Amino acid sequence: MMHKSWILIACLLGFSFLNAQTADLARIEYTYFPQKNSDNSFRRFRAQVAYPIALKKDGAYLVPSVEYRNVNFKFEDPTGFQTTDLDRFQSFTGSLGYTFKFGNDWRFGAEGGLKIASNFSENSILQDDLIYTGSVFFVKIRDKEEVEIPWRLILGLRYSTTTGFPFPLPIVSYYRKWAENWSYTVGIPKTNMKYHFSENSELQAFVTLDGFFANIQRNIDTQPLIFNDRPKAESISMTILLSGLGYQYSITDHLKLYIYGGHTLLNDIRLRDADREDLYTINETNTFYARSGIKFTIF
Image (cartoon, rainbow, N blue to C red; front, side, top):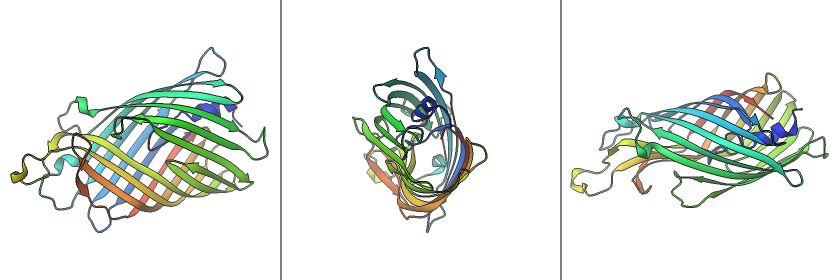
């Protein structure tokens, strides 16, 4: 087992509004889902890396991380406006976390980040492409060296300029291994139940959130010409709630292959104006979802 300090550091890594329970130092992933009753489809490539840096203060670390996402959105539904600028979105994220121990087995963490997310139709970076994020966390872990039934609790707040809310949103995650082969996590954005076949193999049932947000550099008029006073679409957002099954195989203690498949419970893709108000809803029919990849993780 790795040292508990590394496990606690991991609670800072990859935390975002839609990915708040990862413990990955590196990840490469591919996501695909078609839209039912439509020729639309969504494909995403994602690569992420983080590196904890020990400080002189005992138990304190800096955690810089970077992430790249490439989204190919095949939008084939008939519309009254041009959709050629909606087929490719990219994002580049850099963040810096800081964590230290305090009190009785507690750890505090804070993270700030900057994301550039856009369709880059102007081949440049605009002010509206920039997204700012910030987080604070309190973490407590009791592992199997200390208690018979290991558990982990994460409490935090997350702020992002993409949400449209002028205040931080809560993050709560509770993990417990309640039997030799069973564990569960309850929280947002992910809740799951796992069955561990062995130390190298596990199956899980899950409910989770996924999605993306990006600026549209050339604003789109979604209304006929007679409504020219209407706002134009300046951004695209996708929020997906899905459930399904996932399988993970450990090649080594920390290098893991995984595959997830399921069905969306909420499929919300919208074009929005400058005030984040909905202008146009893209096909909402729930559909199949698949995701797979390889990761280097603490846990």
